[in-house]
Amino acid sequence: MRFRITVMLLTAIPAMLTAQNNLKTTVTQRYFNGVRRNLEAAADAMPAAKYNFKLTDGQMSFAEWLNHSTERNYSDCATLKGEPAPEAAAKVPGLKEKDEVSRALKDSFAYCAAAIDGVDDQKVLASPQMTYALLHVVVHNNEIYGNLAGYLRVSGIVPPSTAARAAQTNQSAASPAPAQPAVAGRGARPQPPTRDPNSPGYVKAKELPDGSVPPASADGNFIIGPTHNPAPEMAVKDGVPHGDVFEFTMESKDSKTYPGIAREPNTFAAPDPANQGRLQVNSHPAPYTRKVAVYVPKQYVPGSVAPFIVGADGPDRTLFTALDNLIAEKRVPVMIAISIGNGSGDAQGSERGLEYDTMSGLYAEFVEKEVLPLVERQYKVKLTHDPDGRATTGCSSGGAAAMAMAWYHPELYHRVLSYSGTFVNQQWPYNAETPHGAWEFHEHLIPNSPKKPLRIWMAVSDRDNLSTRDDYHDWVLANENMAKVLTAKGYDYQFVFARNAGHCDRGVKMETLPLALEYTWHGYKAKSK
Image (cartoon, rainbow, N blue to C red):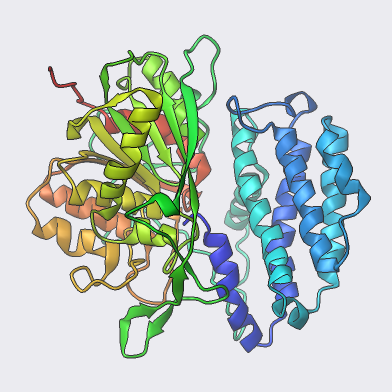
């Protein structure tokens, strides 16, 4: 899920305190030091000539991303110190050259290290502002590093975290490390184990040579990796028509479908003692603002009816770059893309969780009634009503939402594209008709229903999410089960299992999105008027 790092840190706090662990030490040793190391190494790895590089027009440059990290480091860590941000913070926006940008970044991390070193746990936990600052300095930098890893890959540079994992794997293979004793009482969620795609019970899949992806016309199950280099179509190219991208916002007060909710601060979902299959969540009405980005390709003929794709957790500019290149090469139809931001938060009790993890057609109806009419009216485009010309896409809970849109409304959508789909039990409120949430897709719904006219592309990673709190939170097994039941029912689908990758892995997406789009739209023919 998009904010899974935040959730992981927040849910770890009570267990840390119960076990008399030190919050400061855990945050520093387990999270802060790692992201600091990755970002500083990324700053060193990118050549000076590429510091002004942008993945697409309108995005921040590599240097601007680093400056953004530096500014927020000073802001968050000044809060921890209980003092105004140092004077150095005011000079950051004007920095452009590698030496000065990199040095400022490292100075800000040194400032944060000193701030965290001086933290008193009980004081921090008593202050929402300080708790937020301590967690945000990790979460925010992880998000920035995830973006910059894409910049590095497009520039032909292996991101530091990937290089470190590869080196560790090689070292372990040469000389296995002795087993480490478990730490009693540790409350933080462990790192997901690495799964073998050939494990008993998994679907039989074809292992491809490292660096290759399946053909866009091939159904079935495939294994890729461990290397994930960006596809050429993920880079902005000269001479290729670039579509126009428009953005607008939607307010919760204007929505008849989703007026807005949020989970109570510093509270978490907990099993209902009377029914372990249900969760107790403290949630309340709350406003939100969501962004929507609309991509209109240069090849679109005004007044014509166009196919389109709806994406979750937008805006997603990587989607627009891929479409620029694929449309130019006539590998996908000339289509509109509507990339819709979520309503904020994550998991049970949040607006995002309500929209994406609910097993119903409500989100599809929201898009149909409240989003698409705005897009047509504001940007003078005509969107097809042919379900074969409509696709949905998303990652994590967004992938589950994409599937739900098509499953519950096949008269609206026939094509689904999912990365690390949350086909697990994240649903809240509880619904007796689907007691196991999106796990029901592969447990009951698909096996027990007539085949629907859907075409589905899915990917999962060998280190994808896993929670052992029950039997319904294993992302790898869930996606494997999806492939199994889709095979049994005779669906057109392609399933990719990625080695050496994590949840919603950016490297995997940069490698496979062109393939995924081309497969998803394979066989599409516009209906004659």
